[in-house]
Amino acid sequence: MTEPYCDPHPNPAGIKRVAVLTSGGDAPGMNAAIRAVVRTATSQGIEVIGVRRGFSGLHRGDFITLGPRDVANTLQRGGTILLSARSHTWRTPEGRARGARHLRAHDVDALIVIGGDGSFHGAHFLQKEHGIPVIGLPGTIDNDLYGTDHTIGYFTAVETALDAVDKLRDTGASHERIFVIEVMGRHAGHIALDVAVAGGAEEVFIPEDAKEVAGVLDIVKASVKKGKMGSIIIVAEGYPGGATGVAKAIEDGTGMETRVSILGHIQRGGSPVSSDRILASRLGEAAVYALMEGRSDVMVGRQNHGTSFTPLADTWEKRKDVSRDLYRCAKTLSI
Image 1 (spheres, rainbow, N blue to C red):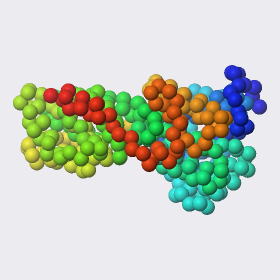
Image 2: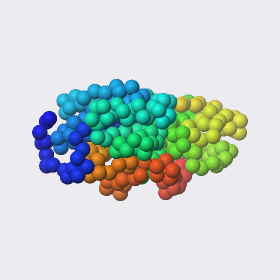
Image 3: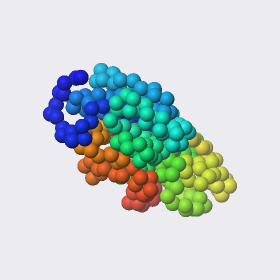
Image 4: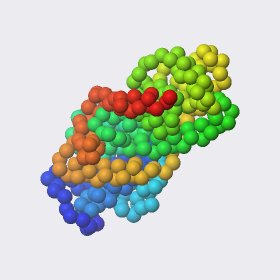
């Protein structure tokens, strides 16, 4: 076993070996989180087992040993080196029981799950049914998990979407067109709202506000009267009708030419920006320490510049709202 290279952390739980997996949709920064888990655990004399392909790999026993050199040169890489997959089998008690047997056969004391609310459901029931300690790390670009200010991958997704918006604005102004741009966010408008403010959008539609699309018509007409050469409308994919519905309403109501751009999964890819790398690194370190301290069935997050621990069930049962102040700001600055 590798000797610790930093001060020992209290380990009353007696953790000797942990497993780590990534599950659900990939998010930029997941590799930074894996790296942090591996190197923090190693520094404390704890071995790490990587589970490939998420819960699908866990119920099949698809394990690899991870050491500090195995995660070298991964900090800047997008995606996940452990791969990810969705597993219908894991949703059954039989599937979870099989995964628990694999963990015990490999003398794994605890599991760290990097993912979103669906992944946390799987982790929660593993702990509840089989008593295996679990810690969740918020890895999702949507930033929709209660209990943390930001999730791993969110900052990069916003930057990726904003870069596209800036380029489309140039084209829109050149051709005097309206661009309706759809960003990810099935149930939450965090990405859409940040992109709208940072990209100077004329309007933004989010799932949290069921305002009528008809309201955008006056905004578009007013923009033309003010001499604006083009308009940008941001729509979260979870808004009823999506970007296509908003664009149709504009064309039907004004007769003006619109173009729809659905950014889609491009927002999940690419090298993570510095904020995601730092967030993932801090959360990965904190997850190992939390297990050593005896914590379980919680998500490690960051709130008000400090580490927070939220029961996994709260992350999906409680609602995380968008910033209403920022929503007002978007409206004020769109004139």
